[in-house]
Length: 267
DNA sequence: CCCGTGCCCTGGCGGC
DNA sequence: TGCCGCCAGGGCACGG
Image (cartoon, rainbow, N blue to C red; front, side, top):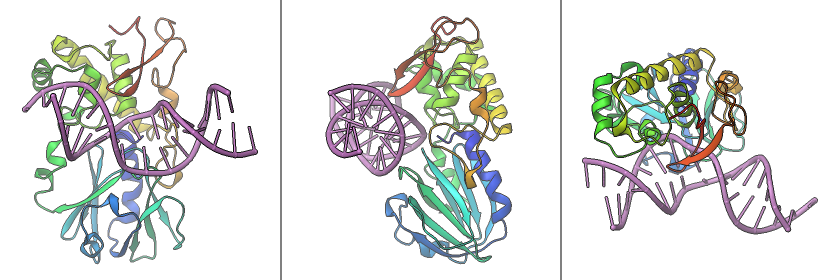
């Protein structure tokens, strides 16, 4: 599932192919992915100026508009030289160089939205995002967590608190920080919050350098697979020995999410 | 406002 | 072999 490193990988692999290209036609094959009837019309003849990433969103900066795309669980992009439509293709952007940028999504969970060029960061959904770990102020996050009555895992998955982390990297971050995912946030000491943020930064950077994580059915643009799955220490490692203490890694549920934990190391 | 639950959606897998 | 039911989960709507 694409989290910050996977989205960054998609963004940077797409960008060189798209900059300077103009969208000549848009076909939406599954309407629930968009929020407006004139989606196609609004994008025609818009030039792609640059791509960006905010949290788990890809931002397409266009001539007059800002298009944002969230891949949710299994959204992918392909650049195709032909007009063939494959299973789970839902949006086709026809470019002026003859290439088709195709959005493909098995689960149909992804979303697109067209926002204004100047205020897109102040409009939903981007306005709801907390800072990414690398921009987070430890003091500020500590104060937010003090006031909350949820588990640390739930808080780290909440994009309003901190953005970019998903199920995989939260598990990895908490393992590295030796903190149990069910620990209530108000019980965390300042140094623990600091450690969590530092580890999140370190893990996300390392994952970006490896092109993200490829597990389950997720792979990024144009079939490029990430390699960070080989570095996972806890996520997916049920019944395997913990790398620190050899005790069996367990799988539990935290706010409905499959969660991997070493109960000996994580307190 | 805060938090928990259910929903969206499809494919893969375990059980029989 | 086939069918059924469950599971995977990011973000959002909704209700208490």
